[in-house]
Length: 581
Image (cartoon, rainbow, N blue to C red; front, side):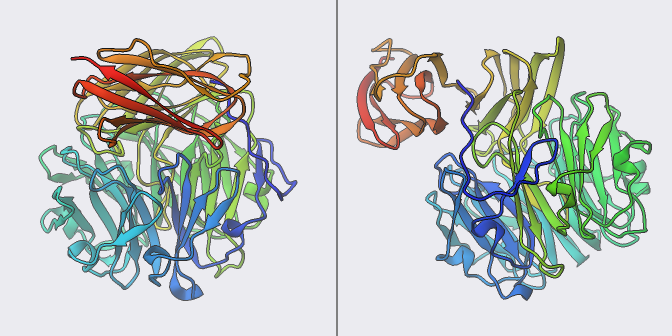
């Protein structure tokens, strides 16, 4: 597949820093003001494009914001519906599919009020959940995160509270939750703000880091694999902590285990802390790198490969207007970027999150800004470079539908050297003023021409492996069923839209579907059964002009007649195929 072309934006700032970002200055996303703390990227209306939710404290007399992505680099502000009219004192949010229906749901924390849970309807609208402890416990809630801690295929929820016990809710699988009331994870009373799930000891069960403000030490809970946790009381992660505002897991040294960045929330009381995972369940505190030698009032943080060179970089927002961007040198060290609007526009940044909102193959950045300090939220569009990439959406079948907790490993030859990267599908990043990156695993590949292997270790224990995968693609990996990969098989631009007959036909269990696009277009390719029920979505993304083919693996479907239909901006067509079993 060719690299998706960058959308044209109407009004942008000319202040571009060396890594290639442009500050967006027009549109509601960056002009609505507000008293914003956190937000998240997620596709709330199932159109293949990242939408944006932003939390507002009611000190601004504004409700929370929801912006739907128009697919042309702009957003439409949603003004109706309960999700933007609840009027809470909101701080944090986390998106995930808690009922495994294929639609993104949303949990929002409120300070001094009950929290909100919204069930996603799949079309950009939501139904507010009004019963259960999860929405009636109240509390001084700040950070929150979905994670399937018992690997039962249903995401559970952890909520951080200031000056009271934290909350853990176990998903019952019926749309309801049970509040966990025993164990240190819910009885440790502190000043918790940020939380982050991550399997730091690679035993297949997610552990939990909790950042605490003030002089209190941070919490690290190791998952015992039986629904309980052991509180870790030794090691630098918990003994060398104070005044923390949040934490982010990421494999910055590409050694296959999760390292931890912890931000310091009070200037003059310490430095941001980087802990390198030793691979045996212990950590080494890094003291000499620029990341760990800068003292400022840090807010949210986020890992992401902004230059697509094959290793993750780091952004740290600042309450004091000092924002930090570090590029990964690929040898375990970082270089601080000190030019460009991302770090020099004077914004007091709270939550920070990366996501490819324009589907052009590189990570863009949104930061929430508290109007206490003045100004609007900020959006930076990545202008990209010639480096290759792959964007992988994980869809669980035995595991939770959103693939949260899945570990994705990509191996490719970059600059003549084999490099193996790991990313984890996560519903949270940063801290008390939390942000959530896109749930897609987005890998930079440098000058790689082919991906040797993609390995996905699902929370269920299922391991999928794909070899010789093409670069510059947006693909969907379905647990146990294979990767839906639309390959551009011709460099010639077709003269018209066309959907060809699948082959072989009849088939068992795999078949190829071929289609042509004479121009760049939003594309959906869906499968229906004989009574018209949608059973699968093969493609849902922006694609350039070209001739494409995609494989459908019907191993898990009964034999019979099926229909496949293509939708583009200017064309739709349906054809019939027969699965024989």
